Length: 434
Image (tube, rainbow, N blue to C red; front, top):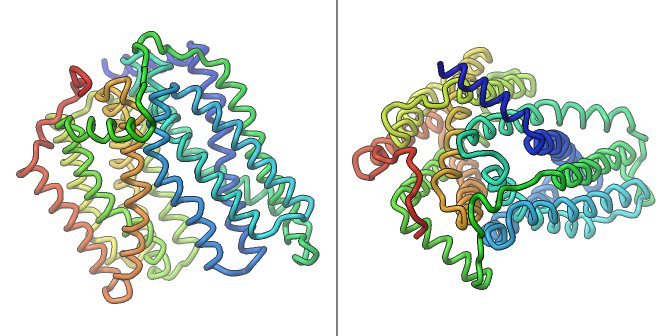
């Protein structure tokens, strides 16, 4: 029965011209994102050969994104997700096109890289809340979970295919330059990679223009206050809403204590196994494949719950914590692949359900700010977690880190179960905006 309903919703979505335009634009845009994620670090290393410079370039891009994402959410609520998203696509087309031209002509210097990285990071601070808030304006409420599952699946597949295609493009069009006279080695391939991303933004802007949003169905989102006052209103709204306050506090704890070990310790684990990059690729691929499987499971079983919505989160996170503990003890790649495949499946299932719950629960006029705060938790807190993990790994073993992190996640789940209202949070939508 659930399977037939899921297939029916999926078929209905793809019969909708709005959804088809959104999906087509997202496929090319998400693929283009991966080209820049590969090309930019490679460009910096080819220009300088300095990992410290690479780190600072990536920080220049990520810090303003985290700092301004709440402002982005306020502007999304003021002007609508489509308008903000459209503007960021045009801006990114210009930025990536400029970067491509500078690389191809040999006129790029490090100061320009810093400036363009800063501008791209700022643009992303507005595109992320717009992109995560637009779906309720495009599809009916009852089709949100299926639509989110499809789009997250597209993103996950782009994370597989994009780096491979980007690497192939750079390799095929490598010009073998030596870095003299401002010409970066592999400049032709790198420039084409940035050019492809610029093209992907332009094309996705064209497809987005053909999407008719359902603003009237949600009521006008009139925000007369200043942007900073709107940010404050969004923070107060999330704090006064009991379910959002409990969930955001819980997710902040998870992001701080768990995200770092996942991002930092898994690559170290690959080296510990002794198979280097091949092992890391297998481990990352297993987690990615599991995430896709979990998203597919959400489509097949959209109403799967262990009691309430909140209780489902706690049960799944508790299982993930238990599975995390033995990761530091493995000595063969297949063992890590098996564990991370299951962890990825559980994580993928949660991702779709959490996004859909937020889109259902938040008042339409507050959706942009709610989603921006959710993204800020992971973009702002996760880097701190990674830095602390790197520091800890100087004094504790890999086994201790994984065992401690897994136990800590189980402890967080236990505290949330016993000392918060997490287990009583339901799928029901909030009655009124606060």
